[in-house]
Length: 124
Image 1 (cartoon, rainbow, N blue to C red):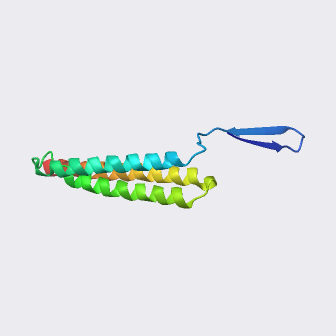
Image 2 (image 1 turned 90 degrees about the vertical axis):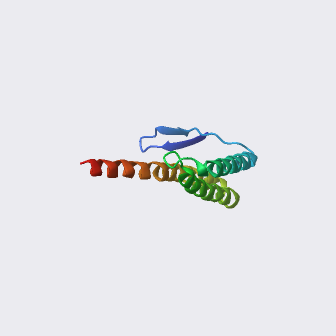
Image 3 (image 1 turned 180 degrees about the vertical axis):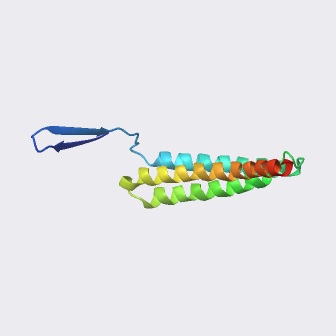
């Protein structure tokens, strides 16, 4: 919790309170990092096993691109955790998480939406 007190020109106090979660230990950042790495390894195994499925259901190429993208963001988070101080850490991690989610949605859904649009143009 952060409390900021500011006195106005009329002698009144304005108190601004911000709540956020924080741990005293940085070990939780590393726990989440290793959890993400474990999930990426499992995703690699699944993408490898799906490579021979019928083409209509085969998403191994998209999964490979998603795994690559997500692993870059995981490494970026690790660099931020190691190099940044606590005042910038929450903002930087929030930005990286947001960019990771946006990249995932774009990589996964934009090709599907373009395929639907191309199919509709062929029908017309």
